[in-house]
Image (tube, rainbow, N blue to C red):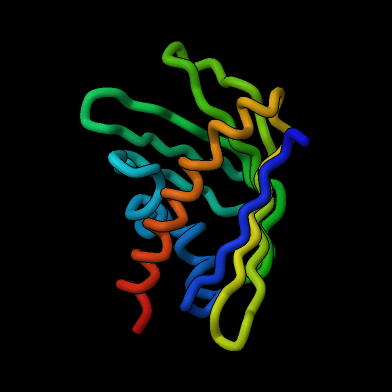
Length: 145
């Protein structure tokens, strides 16, 4: 299988979880694995709109970008995802689908990314996304009234 699925339960309403995925001010606070922070984050939240982020460890910048395919607040978000090469070209595009399900005031988030070219490429993303989602949980805790 060359797709990745991660499911997490967040102690926050799904409207807020959806917002932290789509608002660049929120996104910049949790996007990136451990040891990285988002130094740039732009979002044009409309179907066909582009998003772009830069994460850095202070020494090296890693840019990623994509296009929103489907936006159904606060239930579903679908967008393309690709890392950018230093010369501005894009690597292999994957499709990310994030669904948000209300679970008695909490939010079950299901993250699905596909299709990776190899199992090794897929596996190299697991830890990074898990670390991002740990930061997302911490950010939600700070943002929940």
